[in-house]
Image (cartoon, rainbow, N blue to C red; front, side):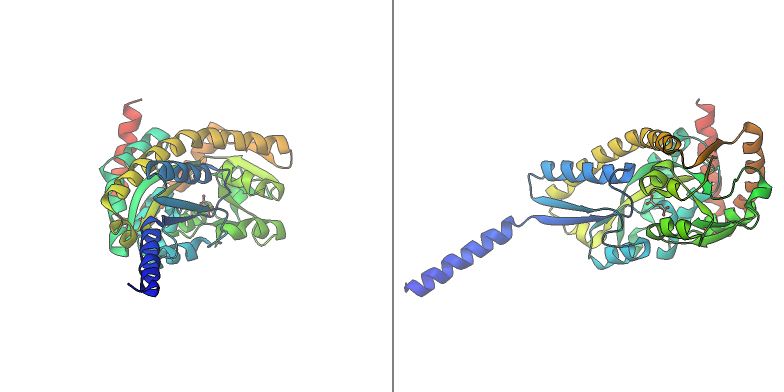
Length: 333
Ligand code: LMR
C-alpha cells in the first residue's frame, strides 16, 4: 500500500473512532435562575446523567432565558435546537395542549399531598401522554410551589384588585382568575417581568417566593401577600425524535437519572421557597402580609366560579378528577 493510502486509512479510522466517542449532547434550557428548585433540579440531572452514562452523554444547562425565552424555547425544542426543557405547566397552551392549564385553577390543589396524587398517578401520566402528538415526550413533573401576589399597591381584600394591572403567564385560566378578582391581566414572558414591574408597565404579578427573590422582584414591589392561591410546577420534556433515537441503554440510564433528579427537586422545593420568603422579609423592601383565614375564605369564594368559566377550555372531567384527588388526599390526612 502506498504511504498516501495508509495515511488516508488511518485518518478515516481516527475520525470514525472520534465520532463513535463524541458524547451525545443535551442542551437543557430554562428561564429561571440557577439557584431555584428548577435550576438546581436541572443541575442535579446533569451530574447524574453524565455519571450514569460514564460521559457518553454531556448535559449543558442554560438558565435565566440565556438561550430562549418562554415561547421560543418550546419552538426550539420542537426543532431540535435544544433537547430538554422544564416549562411551567401554565405555558403549554400555545403549544396546543391546553389541558395543562387545569393546574392554574385557583386553589384546586390545596396541598402538596394532593399534587403528588395527581402527578404520580394516572391523571398525571395521561396529561404527559398528550404531548406526544406534538413531537414531545414528558419525562417528569417537578415542583416549584404555591404562588403569592405581589404589587406596588396593597392587595388583601377583593376591592384591592380593582384596576390593578397584574402580569400572568400565557394561560387562559390565569386570565380568567385575574378577571374574577377584578384585576387586569397582562401576559409577559418571565424574562420581562422585573423590568415591567420596575417601570410600572404592570403594578404587580403572582409568583413563587423563589422566583420573586432570585429575580429581585421584591426590590421593585412594595407589597407581597401570602395567599397560596395557585401553584407553579413544571413538566420536564424532551424532543421525541431525539429521545427515541437514543441507544436503549443510554435512554434507560437517563430515565434513572431523571427519576433521581425528580426526587431531589421535589424534596428541596418547599425549603427553597421558605428560605426565599425569609430572604424577602429580611431585605426589608417589601411588606409581607399573610392573609387571615377570613380573607382567604373571601378569595376562595371569589375564585370558585373560575372552575366553571374554564370548563370548556380544560375539560370538565379533568377538573372533576383533580377535585377527586384533592378530596382523597384530604381524607387520607
Ligand atoms: C413564570 O413565568 O412566572 C414562571 O413560569 C417561571 C418559571 O419557570 O418558574
